[in-house]
Length: 322
Image (cartoon, rainbow, N blue to C red; front, top):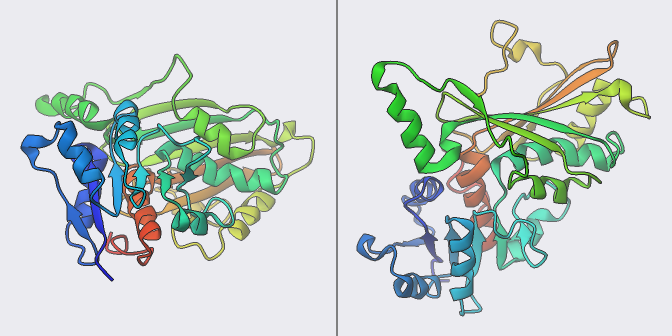
């Protein structure tokens, strides 16, 4: 069989560059690239989009919608890394581990939307617990999350790195999205099976990569009594055998730096989302935490995993050397 051809539309962006780096040494596919001088030439982009087996879109939402409209070749598969199609009914959601049969649906699909970084952490934690009846569908959940500044794309990277010229950062930490209605909330709500959208408070820290997504659970407010062990066991059972979703033991205090700090960058360079449950049954409090590389399982790593599935290549190709 012919080696599949892949085109990254938007290779110059943060996610596009990361995907290119992961694919550039692969011998089981042919990476088709646009002439840099023609990067904004619509006719050339349209030609390349229709000439490959799979196109990966690393574009703003409006540009991604435009690129999809240009695809007239029915054999071209599209993997969209933007938010434009994440809740579209005729697109498959590219989180292979989230639901039974998800991996098979991605493999059979011609239109797959790559998940967002924050939703990957939130959904990995919450969907199994809603399915198990441990979190009620009408629960009012809050998400407190922090990401490295690379999650904001080239503009935020440039802005942050420009502040280091005097030997220190002027922006050590800051919450954002304080007008609410963040673009990831619709995705979180859609796939969580919750009746109400979660309250999402994202923030950015003074480091390039890494992400913690935290969901506090006031167990005293739950109608049904739930223990920390039940939460951890439900997650461990749900993801048993999954290569890229790892569930830590309950209250993994030995993992904490100086017995106190859960380091945010320990998943960097992997395609893993690492799930933790911290709980105190006496005070009826719990905290769910997902740790991931916002440019790995939160973006380019997930894209490569989905691309492999869509092209019938080994799922781990390009991911195991991280």
